[in-house]
Length: 474
Image (cartoon, rainbow, N blue to C red; front, side):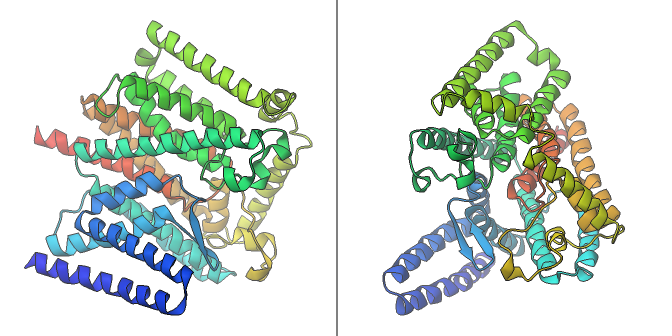
């Protein structure tokens, strides 16, 4: 009976795809056929995801770093691969819950998250730019729903290991592309072939800045801390279940080199905190003679690679890189000074509505004195998530956002000490290190509806649940 219901639901889902296919063929010629073929491919993928929602989550994990390429603009909305797969996965999971009555996994941040969204809802109602507040609210809510679904789909150690492998393979793909991007720009390939934005080519600083498929180098580095945390942890815990040691070292070299060549000060600061977290809380495993030699090799390799890559860009590239990394332009640099002014404005705007804020996504419109949307190409942001949350959601919103993060981190610590499983301990520790790096970087950018951050939350909660459930079964 349940299978019949699910078959009917699948038919109802695929019916619109058939109608869209017919419409595209009838209205357009060549483009119509291309779009129709893409819709058929999407329908086939959707069919398999409907049969196995976890496959959809794996697709989300693999496409996390594909933030800018490939994407498709629909009006003011940019459709991304991970969002498409996430939407399919949500639908598939809901159908499986309705038809198979699957058990709902623990989601410890549920009530704080509900209260947070209630506060955001109130601020949205009173926002001056209501339409933008609603759109950002919907995006953020969508990311939270993805997190809930992901927690429910990662319900076993085996699934977690499979997901980790997909995440690391994806990291290899984008970091290799990142190196190609750097070298391609150095030798003069056009941006159509490298995928770099104009502002990140060697024409600006004298050397390119790796962004891979992400919007900015800072966002790319932020994502990379997730696979970096995982692979560094399983290396120090000497766990070879997911990947072998040689591959672990290769991934470490690729990720750190990409972060360095992304030339983001915020990422460098986060990397220092990330490394410090390992050195302090995993001292017995990290500070050994063997790791000293391996670490020296890794540092030397990355330093030589970065120096070589920069040197072939232009003769003074290394000097310019050093100046940029050391913030020698602090007093006069446009980037630094603008951020400081934005911080001041954020405080001023917060005082206009200190309890519930001026509304999600309303800092940018308020900055421009609420202009018409069609007159603005890119909205200003605070470039500090804590200040932006304070401005847009008030003291209450920021409090519950911090509470959510605190619960996740505190529960992770408890879970870490509850298990003797080296794989689960490594993943838990690596994800905590990644969260530390993400939170540090949140001082330098401000976007709450980023898929990989909500996936990080989900990975941490899912790992906690697996640990706690395994303890109960003993």
